Image 1: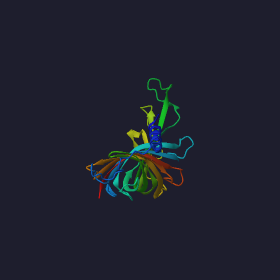
Image 2 (image 1 turned 135 degrees about the vertical axis):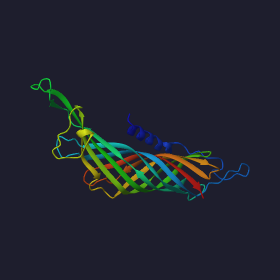
Image 3 (image 1 turned 60 degrees about the vertical axis):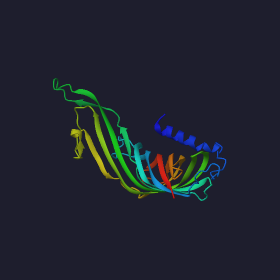
Image 4 (image 1 turned 60 degrees about the horizontal axis):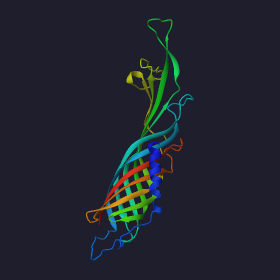
Length: 279
């Protein structure tokens, strides 16, 4: 089972939490004169950070040639940092609103291999009989994708055990695309002693064994992105509930395309931690 399947299975298990009956304290979070506990605050603000596992689905080539395979699936790890808040309309309620703003990097890497081909290499010991070897060529597309993310999620608490709470969340997200680049190369993996013929004088690396076909901004990149984000989180009260630590796992499903011409979409599994202070 790959990481994407494992992440989605774990995400599905978390969403099954509504089947678990809600467990509360005898006083439902209210102060008890015989056993006083601090009341919850209704406004919390703090930093958020996390890592993302990104799944780009595209439909483009390094060069427009039938022998060149399409890039269809790319993956990569990214990160996010930002600020978050939480608003509880009722101090003893079980739902709330969580807005976030974050700077995010969601890169990816596509790799494909061209069909192997037989090539002839000069044979110094027998010039009349060149050596026949297999030629292996791979193509690579490195993607950088930088976003300013705005989201607002509805939170519903399901489980309360002392200072620990478990919740499910969901809501819309909007991203402004700060930047996106694509670097597409073709590399001669085998034979090691060969180099590409380069009649177009393309930039090269590795002594001519790698051709750089493109290195720049993603053409026709959309300036904005819309998505739906949902998941589950735990909440741990710290320092008499003045601080709340909330680790969670989410799935961010892209609705709009990275580009309008290539059916290129981005979906991400987000491992995120908020640390909020009560006010």
